[in-house]
Image 1 (tube, rainbow, N blue to C red):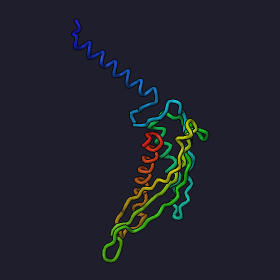
Image 2 (cartoon, one colour):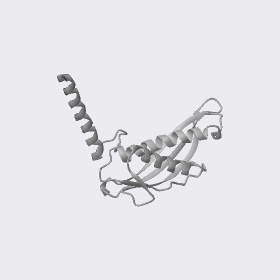
Image 3 (cartoon, one colour):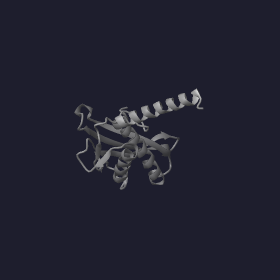
Image 4 (cartoon, helix red, strand yellow):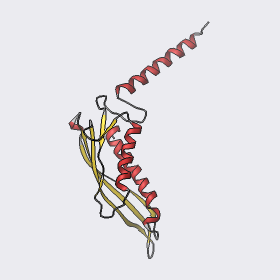
Length: 173
């Protein structure tokens, strides 16, 4: 004989599973936090040209690939070469280092900054389209050359920028 408790527990479990499936299938919510309308099925992300005076030779490709990977791994959108429901275009506007803290004779801390400009076009709902600059920085010890820390710094900054851009587009923050 099945107890009343087990029946109620099973019934509640089925209701919760149904609610989660309904939310996820309606495109209202996903477990990554993305809130993508159900009618949006695809995204195109163009290659980001590096327009900065100081050029890191791998920055454009790394940034573009990582942004594409974020959308592929955390949404159900199809990545197209062009003409997606959502289109992301942009450029790396600046990539520079500067001292930010000094001791008596030299810089105690240096800072690497990357600035990108994003043009987001929502072909499903034009009023959601926008253009915005995103900037992130990381510090490294003064008295060191940028080349000692550059790979780690650019990886960290790219991750932060991509997180900011993903949140602005897919999470609506």
